[in-house]
Length: 161
Image 1 (cartoon, rainbow, N blue to C red):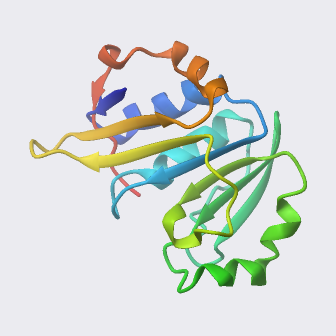
Image 2: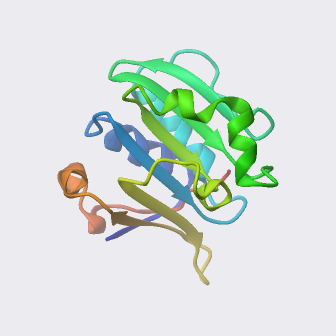
């Protein structure tokens, strides 16, 4: 299943509607190259879940934690991670004990230290310049999260990282 987006606002709108379906615990991997909209999508989801503070990309801190209306949310950006073992330095094991929403950018860089994904959302730029979000559910409970939006109901591009 996939969605195409024409601009960053369409991506944020998708993220806001998607957030209304999420329940914790949930681990969502956000995959794709630089600039495809992973951070834009994560920010929209977190804002829709009630985060009022500034939501910055955790590119340098690796992880930011936020209280949301459904419980704690962790936003990880592992782009600058050199070795997966570096997650031990931020105490990743401590976060595994509490049910949370995990939004993980660049999850392949934390392989072996992250919880397995319930859902992968892959963003990419198509040849015609549009951006595509592809949905890959790894657990049955995430399938009803797509009820909020059918793939054909939006044709927009998600810009930004």
